[in-house]
Image (cartoon, rainbow, N blue to C red):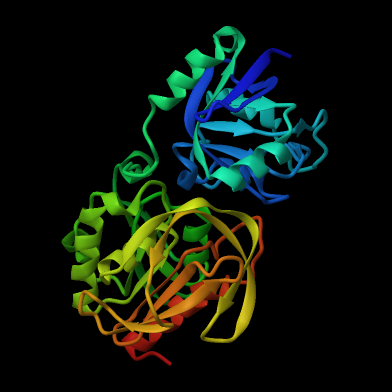
Length: 376
């Protein structure tokens, strides 16, 4: 195996072996705590611009298959694991993880102490980093740190246009038709679309640059803002469009990036977390039911709401309930408007690899649509 080196912007270095494509890559380094679902992680557009560290020590044993892909490609900018499985043992596997990384030109590194790396990131916060293998790994650490430090910070980056669809795409409902949803694609996952169409909803997906008029042009029964990468403070166009949608009375549902943009549309601020939430084992309290859900996360930014749990929208949209909250660090994990039909969550109820505690939120969307149409 070819030698590789992981270099953090603070000068921390981990030496290992090349995994996937040989070469170099840079990005914001983050850690994901899921023990399953690595293929969902890799193909989630929300990870664009990031180097992902898997905290689970053994990765790749189930290989990869086309059915589990959440988009058309791998989006992570780099991949860090401890031990790569030497064999693939799953009847659904179509190829190895290593071959899949090479196919999509993803530079990775293995055989490093991911526990030590994760503890370091938890102590000092996520930062820029680079993976260098082959000839690139032979350069001095000082030179590689300069390369890493010259790259863009995640704060201030607008990445939704990079991962969004370029054209309008339609997905018909399966089974009995209930209504229609217009999706603003900010990095939408396949599982989100499937959760809607399987519940009888026609889906029309629009590019990230679509206006409120575009999204409302077919008189949808609801508008949905998807998950996606980047800093929500850069999405002023999508926020302005959402404010028009909220004023129209059309029901709204948002997930992850969509939650952050609803927060900004309501007049709240967003901020960058020290190391974010990523993985499939985060406990969240649903204040509307009193239940604790184990949830899947992938976000480095969050909505800031002072006071509460019920507050007034600074932008004049009435009362807002902080409907969900993280039990790890009290981060806002969901918003529910009490005077208009709009709600959102920061986590991922569509998580194909699980957990599925929060899948009911798609049923809640259907209920809002039915109520708005006067259907029992």
